[in-house]
Image (cartoon, rainbow, N blue to C red):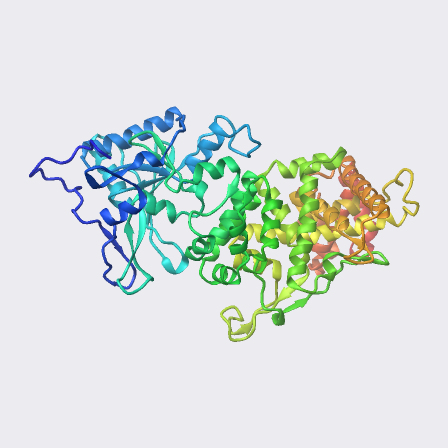
Amino acid sequence: EQGQQQPQQGEENALDMPPNKPVLPLQGGTKPTRSPGGAGLRRTIGQQQQGDPDKLDTTSYVAPLHMQLSPEEERLFKLLIRIVEDYRMGTTLRVAGGWVRDKLLHEHMSSRNVRSKRSGDVNVDIDIALDNMLGQDFAKTINDWLKQHGRTSKHVAVVSRNPEKSKHLETATMKLGGFSIDFVNLRTECYSEDSRIPETMCIGTPYEDALRRDLTINSLFYNINTGCVEDWTGAGVKDLERQVVATPLPALTTLRDDPLRALRAIRFAARFGFTMADDLLNACRNPQVHQALLTKVSRERVGSEVQNMITAQSPLMALNLIVYLGLGPSVFTTPAPEHVQVAGSDVGGEEGEVDFAGQANHQHDRYQAGLVHLTHMNTLLEGGGGCLRRVAEAVASDAHQRAVALYAAFLWPFHGLQYTPPPGTKKGKRAGKLSRARPVVDVILGDNLKRGRRELREVGLVQECAVLFQNMARVHTMYDTSMHGPLPPIKLTRRELGLVVRRSGPLWRESLLLGLSADLSKRHGGLGEVFNSRHVKRHLRMLAVYEALAQTIEDYGLEGAWDLKPMFNGNEVIAILPGLKDHPRVIAEVQEVQIKWMLDHPEGTTEELAESLKAKYPTLC
């Protein structure tokens, strides 16, 4: 930090910072104390230089690692340094968090079987920490500089602090040079003299800020001014090398500061294939953390973390950790049991067969059952053979479709459960009347994970149509009594399969895979029975059945069957069946009859269809 230019004596500069550190007051207007950022604190965090105890020796925190910048990143950082120098701000700019971590993983540890970014990928999300001003002020300075140099200013979005929901820092976000940049100040907490409850969030030192980060691997800085990597906790680089997810402070302290960090730790462990530190695992099991995650953190933030897990490379590992650590009820929150009832279900197993999910009388058992279904779905999406492989590849290649399939599989044990809001609650009345029962899956995804209506509709449709494919598989296996030799040919008509494909629409692949995943999760005799050779034979046979279903759909040419329109519109149907004028309600039935006939006769003509309608409705001719 030595050698930074300072404004000359008497020179007017509206961006000069006052001699005291600026303080961010908490909501409520309580006046905070000053941040203890002077010599007393610096003596505890750095080596003192001879002759001046206020100078902090930063060399102890510089990691001997080279950071290779892309041309776009170099241009961005040069622009920011130019702005700092032109206004003589004396600001040290540090890139924090994921950008530094991912760069180091790719450049120095890509040979250690770590799931890092591909070569050539540029992380366009950059967090920049400021040591002497707030993010909103720095973003405003950038726009002032751009205007003075004849450039277009950028929109700045400010996300305010919300300590009640564990959002401790005000963040200013802007797009610059193709990058999405978050500007925040280095932070520390200020306390009153007789209390350990923080009253304010102050601008802190790099060391203080690093200690307040969620994980050591996310506490690394890249100093734009010096071009050096800084590891103020002394553990960030080491934990990257050891492939360990750990916290800078005691784990329980870090999670109490923001309970969402439990999910972030799980997400990064799954993303990189790292091991979670023992004290972090124990803290994630703490009931206080579970309750705080449920009540202190906004559901939007929880839903965002879960979505990042589902769309990442290893969703199975992430959700396994959530269930293993007992976080399921705090994440995939369900309504109170007294307001949940089982809807009429057409899911029935074969005689003597017990559905794994069907035995889940306790909520935790349902999460365990969901992991079984998710395991099968994830395995199907990652590999396979024949027509099933083509089906799985079509789903896995689209991030949204893959997420829908994984959500539907994990939440399959909750399919068929309905929630009725009790009277007197916000959602217990609608226009003065009791509201209708809602699927519990909708409550989990919509109310508690804040997923959009499209995902709710699609997950529900996939689960509904999975039942239809299960029923078709059972009909087919009725003719397969030997469990040996070649599979008997499919005895389902084009109409039967076509109607199911029409009902599921473009999601028929996800529905078929979910039906297979659920059938593979079934056991004979209960949860505790040892998996034996009979189960293996049954699984192989079930795979063959669904492979035959997928192949038959392909052979019948049913792709796009959901777009099939009746040959005759309403007026044309009345011309063929004049009696419909007196029975207008029958027109919808006739249109459905047309679709069924067209599925049975893909090469049929309009003349043949007209004769078929006359034969079916002779009294209307």
